[in-house]
Image 1 (cartoon, rainbow, N blue to C red):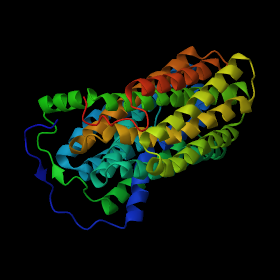
Image 2 (image 1 turned 135 degrees about the vertical axis):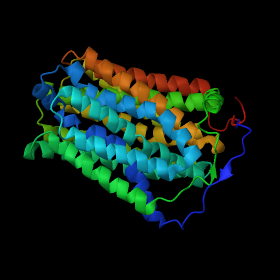
Image 3 (image 1 turned 90 degrees about the horizontal axis):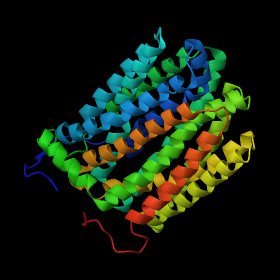
Image 4 (image 1 turned 60 degrees about the horizontal axis):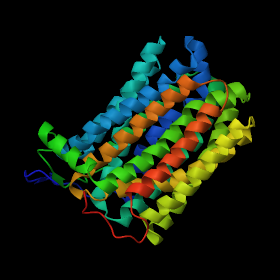
Length: 415
């Protein structure tokens, strides 16, 4: 339900750039989140030793980034509905670049954590507004298909980032990781300036009014299928962030991998994500969003239960972690783009706010999962594996309870 205030047309736009170039920029904006997280994973044990902090505190470089990212979504969505996608993107990428440069100078762990918080706030503009732009341009299954293409490209970041991070650590120290992130931020800022035109053709002057925000978020949050899809993808994020937080200490400290070897192992896991995203581009068009999500959930459950069984059976081997997680991430590549399309699809006039709210929920639970795995760390893979299995089962149960099965009557108009 929209406010009575009539949206106004956006200012005239220059012609859109070539579709391939625009897709490359949008993919980069979506990929900035996994890049910013995953490039640091091989360095977590190093950071802990450098600043003399324990595992739980070291996890803050992940969890505060995710927390800042999640909270900022509640602002970026409405701001982009009010002022347009392009100016808000430029502001976010500028903040990300500044925070990355500041992190290269960090003299203390507290300084580094503060920079990571600012990085998360700035990075948030990328995926939130890239997805909203897709919703501006497409409808229905085409939204899921386009998001799947972005997800397939996005999957390159977690494949390449930990490998690159490990190699950077071999050649230098952890500050080089933030130099790399600053360079990426500068390229994306230039790309947005040169290539991204305004896609929000109906600017809403009332979108940032507090009363309007509360009404819009209440409307979105009370929609049954929005809740179902959002909680489903959020449960998947719990498993993903449990792995992100726990795997460096399990694979490097417990199983003895070098940072660059960890990067290659992590890349193997993320190949599952890319494969799932590529499958999702076809499945969403041929089978529909719901069937695609169900197939992904089956992979969630298989991977989660397999890792938990091996961990509690005290099977301590790299394959016992990497194999099950690759299966889980195969499912993640199918669940995430289709789940996000299902969540924001019913709200064409509030796409920015809907994308922001679902992202906020995902990242908030992801930050909590990261912190929990750090707090429960016992030197074994059991805390990570248990949370992975629980998230997989939770996602399947939520989806079964709140979203209709394939072929059932749609609920797009039902609160």
